[in-house]
Length: 259
Image (cartoon, rainbow, N blue to C red; front, top):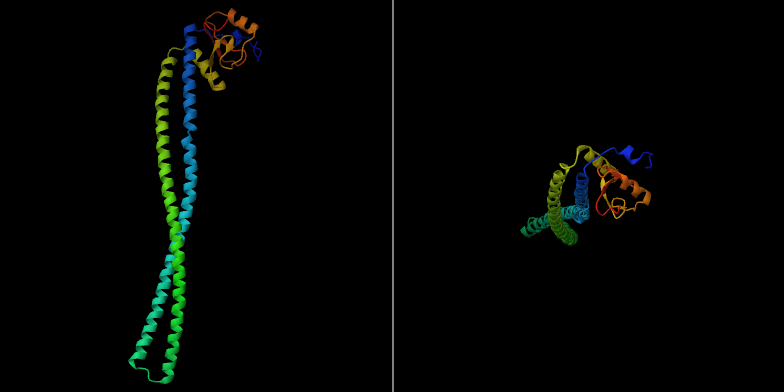
């Protein structure tokens, strides 16, 4: 009696040749292989590595954008400072040329001009100091940008290598899957439709649909059957499709069942 109150005969009125039942074990082996391959496909270490590398690459690229923006801002600031220095120097040169030309004869105007030249010299000095500071900041920013860019390039190389390893692993898995699927198709053709339908239903429920009765133990749930259950199974015709009283999988009797 199973947990639902149905006997084996009531629940499974199926009959199948012992050879067909034995095919289920090979079919289950292929299905187990396909499950393992699917698990390997979704849990490749390269996938986790690529995810980690992708996160690092995104962070580095964000830093690169910030560093590049700083370099561009400082480059514009330097050009502006250069322009301001050149403007003030040009004005100083014009004033010096006017004084040297003798066009200004008034002592007062000459004094004012000299005062303006002194102010221009101070302004040029201030602007050049600011320009030097901007240039130093620009050099530091460019060095930081170059370092980030180099790190990002190295990371891209690591990503390319990881992608190549992932693709190679996926190709190998796909090749094995194709072989296992083909072998499964050959085995399916040897199993009666009603038996196959039951097997597929149980496989969807429990992850595997059939297991061998090996040395008085179900190889599906790995539990040893008690004496009463073993006597019931031994008493059933060899072409009866029986179920494990513990896990409900199709229980395939073999020469090593221990009945």
